Image (cartoon, rainbow, N blue to C red; front, top):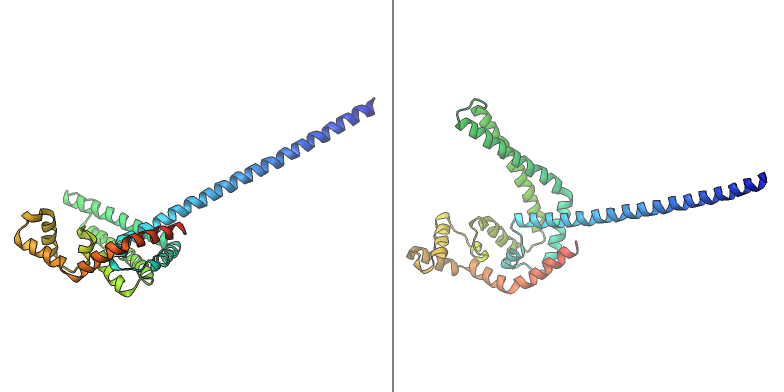
Length: 246
Protein backbone atom coordinates (compact mmCIF):
# COMPACT_ATOMS: atom_id res chain seq x y z
CA UNK A 1 0.00 0.00 0.00
CA UNK A 2 2.83 2.32 0.86
CA UNK A 3 4.53 1.59 -2.46
CA UNK A 4 1.31 2.36 -4.37
CA UNK A 5 0.87 5.61 -2.48
CA UNK A 6 4.49 6.58 -3.13
CA UNK A 7 4.14 5.82 -6.85
CA UNK A 8 0.94 7.82 -7.03
CA UNK A 9 2.57 10.84 -5.36
CA UNK A 10 5.66 10.55 -7.56
CA UNK A 11 3.62 10.47 -10.78
CA UNK A 12 1.54 13.47 -9.73
CA UNK A 13 4.61 15.36 -8.59
CA UNK A 14 6.27 14.84 -11.96
CA UNK A 15 3.07 15.93 -13.69
CA UNK A 16 2.92 19.07 -11.56
CA UNK A 17 6.55 19.86 -12.28
CA UNK A 18 5.95 19.40 -15.99
CA UNK A 19 2.98 21.75 -15.87
CA UNK A 20 5.02 24.33 -13.98
CA UNK A 21 7.85 24.11 -16.54
CA UNK A 22 5.48 24.58 -19.46
CA UNK A 23 3.88 27.56 -17.72
CA UNK A 24 7.27 29.13 -17.05
CA UNK A 25 8.36 28.67 -20.67
CA UNK A 26 5.10 30.18 -21.92
CA UNK A 27 5.54 33.15 -19.61
CA UNK A 28 9.08 33.75 -20.87
CA UNK A 29 7.86 33.63 -24.48
CA UNK A 30 5.06 36.09 -23.77
CA UNK A 31 7.41 38.46 -21.94
CA UNK A 32 9.98 38.31 -24.73
CA UNK A 33 7.33 38.93 -27.36
CA UNK A 34 6.00 41.85 -25.39
CA UNK A 35 9.49 43.23 -24.90
CA UNK A 36 10.25 42.80 -28.60
CA UNK A 37 7.01 44.54 -29.59
CA UNK A 38 7.72 47.39 -27.18
CA UNK A 39 11.25 47.67 -28.57
CA UNK A 40 10.00 47.78 -32.16
CA UNK A 41 7.39 50.36 -31.18
CA UNK A 42 10.08 52.43 -29.51
CA UNK A 43 12.30 52.21 -32.59
CA UNK A 44 9.42 53.26 -34.86
CA UNK A 45 8.55 56.20 -32.61
CA UNK A 46 12.23 57.22 -32.53
CA UNK A 47 12.38 57.10 -36.32
CA UNK A 48 9.33 59.33 -36.57
CA UNK A 49 10.83 61.81 -34.12
CA UNK A 50 14.13 61.81 -36.02
CA UNK A 51 12.39 62.51 -39.33
CA UNK A 52 10.43 65.35 -37.78
CA UNK A 53 13.61 66.79 -36.30
CA UNK A 54 15.42 66.60 -39.63
CA UNK A 55 12.55 68.25 -41.47
CA UNK A 56 12.34 70.94 -38.80
CA UNK A 57 16.06 71.66 -39.09
CA UNK A 58 15.78 71.89 -42.87
CA UNK A 59 12.96 74.40 -42.46
CA UNK A 60 15.15 76.29 -39.99
CA UNK A 61 17.68 76.94 -42.76
CA UNK A 62 14.94 77.73 -45.28
CA UNK A 63 14.95 74.43 -47.17
CA UNK A 64 11.39 73.38 -47.95
CA UNK A 65 9.61 72.23 -51.12
CA UNK A 66 8.60 75.78 -52.07
CA UNK A 67 12.11 77.19 -51.76
CA UNK A 68 13.65 74.20 -53.55
CA UNK A 69 11.18 74.63 -56.40
CA UNK A 70 11.63 78.41 -56.60
CA UNK A 71 15.40 77.96 -56.71
CA UNK A 72 15.09 75.48 -59.58
CA UNK A 73 16.45 72.45 -57.73
CA UNK A 74 16.17 69.24 -59.74
CA UNK A 75 13.74 66.62 -58.45
CA UNK A 76 16.52 64.03 -58.53
CA UNK A 77 18.47 66.02 -55.92
CA UNK A 78 15.75 65.90 -53.27
CA UNK A 79 16.33 62.32 -52.13
CA UNK A 80 20.09 62.81 -51.76
CA UNK A 81 19.48 66.07 -49.92
CA UNK A 82 17.17 64.43 -47.39
CA UNK A 83 19.60 61.52 -46.92
CA UNK A 84 22.53 63.85 -46.20
CA UNK A 85 20.37 65.88 -43.80
CA UNK A 86 19.35 62.73 -41.95
CA UNK A 87 22.95 61.53 -41.69
CA UNK A 88 24.07 64.90 -40.35
CA UNK A 89 21.35 64.87 -37.72
CA UNK A 90 22.26 61.36 -36.61
CA UNK A 91 25.75 62.68 -35.85
CA UNK A 92 25.20 66.22 -34.61
CA UNK A 93 21.54 66.71 -33.62
CA UNK A 94 22.31 66.13 -29.93
CA UNK A 95 25.12 68.70 -29.97
CA UNK A 96 22.86 71.23 -31.69
CA UNK A 97 20.13 70.60 -29.12
CA UNK A 98 22.60 71.30 -26.31
CA UNK A 99 23.78 74.48 -28.02
CA UNK A 100 20.22 75.66 -28.57
CA UNK A 101 19.53 75.02 -24.89
CA UNK A 102 22.52 77.14 -23.95
CA UNK A 103 21.18 79.93 -26.13
CA UNK A 104 17.82 79.73 -24.38
CA UNK A 105 19.41 79.73 -20.93
CA UNK A 106 21.73 82.63 -21.80
CA UNK A 107 18.77 84.60 -23.16
CA UNK A 108 16.81 84.05 -19.94
CA UNK A 109 19.78 85.11 -17.83
CA UNK A 110 20.21 88.28 -19.86
CA UNK A 111 16.52 89.14 -19.45
CA UNK A 112 16.69 88.56 -15.69
CA UNK A 113 19.81 90.69 -15.25
CA UNK A 114 18.50 93.47 -17.48
CA UNK A 115 15.15 93.68 -15.67
CA UNK A 116 16.83 93.67 -12.28
CA UNK A 117 19.10 96.58 -13.21
CA UNK A 118 16.20 98.56 -14.71
CA UNK A 119 14.32 98.20 -11.44
CA UNK A 120 17.25 99.57 -9.54
CA UNK A 121 17.83 96.34 -7.65
CA UNK A 122 21.30 95.50 -6.36
CA UNK A 123 21.18 91.78 -7.19
CA UNK A 124 23.33 92.31 -10.29
CA UNK A 125 25.98 94.74 -11.51
CA UNK A 126 26.87 96.17 -14.90
CA UNK A 127 29.63 93.58 -15.06
CA UNK A 128 26.99 90.86 -14.67
CA UNK A 129 25.12 92.44 -17.58
CA UNK A 130 28.26 92.43 -19.72
CA UNK A 131 28.94 88.81 -18.80
CA UNK A 132 25.37 87.80 -19.67
CA UNK A 133 25.63 89.49 -23.06
CA UNK A 134 28.97 87.82 -23.72
CA UNK A 135 27.58 84.41 -22.79
CA UNK A 136 24.64 84.89 -25.14
CA UNK A 137 26.93 85.98 -27.97
CA UNK A 138 29.09 82.89 -27.47
CA UNK A 139 26.07 80.58 -27.33
CA UNK A 140 24.59 82.12 -30.47
CA UNK A 141 27.90 81.83 -32.29
CA UNK A 142 28.25 78.13 -31.43
CA UNK A 143 24.70 77.32 -32.51
CA UNK A 144 25.01 79.39 -35.69
CA UNK A 145 28.25 77.67 -36.62
CA UNK A 146 26.61 74.28 -36.14
CA UNK A 147 23.64 75.25 -38.31
CA UNK A 148 25.99 76.64 -40.95
CA UNK A 149 27.81 73.30 -41.09
CA UNK A 150 24.44 71.62 -41.59
CA UNK A 151 23.54 73.93 -44.45
CA UNK A 152 26.95 73.37 -45.99
CA UNK A 153 26.50 69.60 -45.87
CA UNK A 154 23.03 69.73 -47.36
CA UNK A 155 24.14 72.34 -49.90
CA UNK A 156 26.64 69.89 -51.34
CA UNK A 157 23.66 68.07 -52.89
CA UNK A 158 22.19 71.21 -54.48
CA UNK A 159 23.22 72.73 -57.79
CA UNK A 160 25.47 75.80 -57.18
CA UNK A 161 23.15 78.21 -59.00
CA UNK A 162 20.14 76.95 -57.06
CA UNK A 163 22.06 77.15 -53.76
CA UNK A 164 22.74 80.85 -54.38
CA UNK A 165 19.00 81.45 -54.72
CA UNK A 166 18.20 79.36 -51.63
CA UNK A 167 20.69 81.36 -49.57
CA UNK A 168 19.07 84.57 -50.78
CA UNK A 169 15.58 83.29 -49.97
CA UNK A 170 16.81 82.24 -46.54
CA UNK A 171 18.43 85.62 -45.87
CA UNK A 172 15.24 87.47 -46.83
CA UNK A 173 12.61 85.21 -45.29
CA UNK A 174 12.32 87.44 -42.24
CA UNK A 175 10.20 89.76 -44.39
CA UNK A 176 7.50 87.05 -44.56
CA UNK A 177 6.50 87.55 -48.18
CA UNK A 178 5.48 85.23 -51.01
CA UNK A 179 8.56 83.19 -51.90
CA UNK A 180 9.41 84.75 -55.32
CA UNK A 181 9.61 88.22 -53.76
CA UNK A 182 12.37 86.93 -51.49
CA UNK A 183 14.51 86.05 -54.52
CA UNK A 184 15.46 89.71 -55.12
CA UNK A 185 18.06 91.89 -53.39
CA UNK A 186 16.60 94.96 -51.70
CA UNK A 187 17.58 97.41 -49.00
CA UNK A 188 15.47 97.81 -45.88
CA UNK A 189 13.66 100.88 -47.20
CA UNK A 190 12.72 99.07 -50.41
CA UNK A 191 11.50 96.05 -48.46
CA UNK A 192 9.25 98.26 -46.36
CA UNK A 193 8.01 99.98 -49.52
CA UNK A 194 7.29 96.61 -51.13
CA UNK A 195 5.39 95.34 -48.10
CA UNK A 196 3.31 98.51 -48.02
CA UNK A 197 2.51 98.20 -51.73
CA UNK A 198 1.36 94.60 -51.26
CA UNK A 199 -0.66 95.50 -48.20
CA UNK A 200 -2.36 98.61 -49.62
CA UNK A 201 -2.82 97.49 -53.21
CA UNK A 202 -4.04 100.23 -55.55
CA UNK A 203 -4.26 102.70 -52.68
CA UNK A 204 -0.50 102.45 -52.05
CA UNK A 205 1.58 105.60 -52.66
CA UNK A 206 3.06 105.90 -56.17
CA UNK A 207 6.60 105.27 -54.95
CA UNK A 208 5.53 102.00 -53.36
CA UNK A 209 3.71 100.93 -56.49
CA UNK A 210 6.90 101.67 -58.43
CA UNK A 211 8.87 99.47 -56.06
CA UNK A 212 6.40 96.64 -56.60
CA UNK A 213 6.57 97.01 -60.38
CA UNK A 214 10.37 97.00 -60.30
CA UNK A 215 10.47 93.86 -58.16
CA UNK A 216 8.04 92.03 -60.42
CA UNK A 217 10.18 92.85 -63.43
CA UNK A 218 13.35 91.65 -61.66
CA UNK A 219 14.85 88.52 -63.21
CA UNK A 220 15.14 86.86 -59.80
CA UNK A 221 11.42 87.27 -59.13
CA UNK A 222 10.43 86.20 -62.64
CA UNK A 223 12.56 83.06 -62.59
CA UNK A 224 11.47 82.09 -59.08
CA UNK A 225 7.82 82.52 -60.04
CA UNK A 226 8.22 80.38 -63.15
CA UNK A 227 10.13 77.67 -61.29
CA UNK A 228 7.65 77.60 -58.44
CA UNK A 229 4.75 77.15 -60.82
CA UNK A 230 6.34 74.42 -62.93
CA UNK A 231 8.49 72.53 -60.41
CA UNK A 232 6.59 72.56 -57.12
CA UNK A 233 4.33 69.51 -57.79
CA UNK A 234 7.30 67.33 -58.73
CA UNK A 235 9.45 68.61 -55.86
CA UNK A 236 6.61 68.04 -53.40
CA UNK A 237 6.19 64.44 -54.57
CA UNK A 238 9.93 63.76 -54.42
CA UNK A 239 10.05 65.33 -50.94
CA UNK A 240 7.28 63.10 -49.60
CA UNK A 241 8.79 59.97 -51.14
CA UNK A 242 12.18 60.81 -49.63
CA UNK A 243 10.76 60.98 -46.10
CA UNK A 244 8.87 57.76 -46.62
CA UNK A 245 12.17 56.05 -47.29
CA UNK A 246 13.85 57.30 -44.12
